[in-house]
Length: 415
Image 1 (spheres, rainbow, N blue to C red):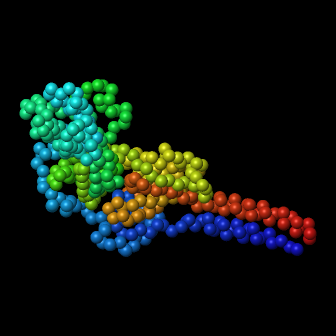
Image 2: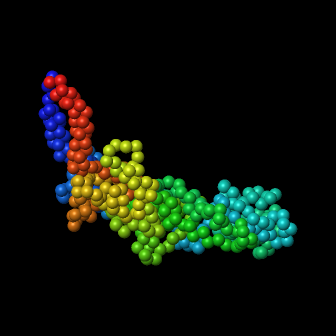
């Protein structure tokens, strides 16, 4: 029986020819899915470039810079500066107050917590609504009830009310932020509670109970946000706030908020690079998903990708992330590696997948044209170079040849 010694050689030649090919075609995307500079590489610049199909609605494409007043504001009253720009925020559920009553013998006076429905319950008397009121307004409301019921005389100092602690509040944030929805602002840890250890305390400056803190709690503003026109809505009225100073280092009026407030951050429809870095309105860091596997495996441990690796500073670009996930460097056989970025246009909901040649990003002087910024929730994956594929093919052929070698020796012995 003769054994065909050329069969392993033919398999080896086939592996060499296959390993020289690119692992797969470049990703295809819909027109309008790119929304950040560096995502849509129009000139190609020798990077893999897939087809851009025209199946997305024209209305969903990101326009040039624009600015529109939210339609719902047409049904609301524009508030005067004195209504929203006061130093102290209105009372909210969870706030702690100290009540003193003239001539009281520890029956009515003491510390009160504003109930979840916004009322204060004085023993033996009906609930008194204080939500949305200042401390002075709440003091007058309590005094009026006690005077009307004959508990105290109608004296100016018959009732005294002071704030002990301002609790965190729930507000709704929508628009050009990374995580729209209800958020908590001004929440305190048990160790930082006011008045629990100090004894009698009057006054509390909870600076975290503000518009900017609520925006950060909603993931921070996106790069297309209009931070010069942020809207705060309360009790059927709204105020327009210019918070651009919190980003660019100028003056800004950060307003205190109350439970039930709403905040709208409009989109300008275009990219502002000044909003793609840590500020008082943007996220300090982002969480991304990474995969860097030479061969399919159950985890990324061999590539040193862990929880710390996937947490990046806001403003990180694709090439920096490639270094973080160990896709850059090594032997020359790795120099043809590719990195794929999977992102999503938050304005249209359209996903985008782009592919870049890592070595060209490293060597090219105009790399930023093809080196987009990363956004929260992006996903990254590295693909091996053709040389690595070739090396693996050689290993596979070596294993295959090793398995047929005994048969070759046996065939010679038989002949």
